[in-house]
Image (tube, one colour):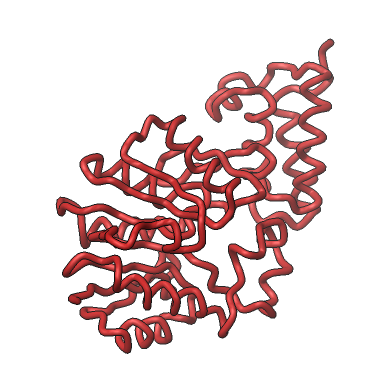
Length: 284
């Protein structure tokens, strides 16, 4: 049965509702939810604005809109988020891949593209970083590790869906699943780095994300310290270690890595001009 709403009117009504809910990106969110409801690309909204929704589509769209109005992230509602031009399945068991994390991929590629050696991604989540690097360097093997079995399974599903065959995803705590003789020319990580009393934890999409993937002890630096210390046993000679971290942690992460003997330690900024990625190379 036909709805009174056309594509155009449904979109406009949704934008108004999201604006009243103080949403920061009402037009984008409304378009993504409507495209998901219709199972159509974004271009369809422009090409067929006068097309009427069915009553079933209207009801489904309204349910999705209600979820967004309560603050639930769009990525969890539609079950997908694009990262590095890769459409990734996401779930509430993993962090939502963010554009700032693409800086970690860029920096890693800048330092190691064209080189040999295996790559390790610690705390892989959806597999976003591992799959981005694997897609750009198909001749290198990439291993991703995550503490949560459901995250490891999701990353494996994403690799299969994208037909990226040079990845392996393991379940365990940081380096635990690796054999003692495993060696990597590049280790990357977007570990938990937020302090447990940070006010941002009660705001926006972060409220719905797994707390264990966000929060670390020692002012958010505990996991970074652990990884930087233990990575020295798994890096090849002249191998690189690169972290994503908080906007105000650049100085602290550089100090941690330098104290552990890493060389050429540097911090790169994200697209907003904030310290975001710190890296260094290690010579045993």
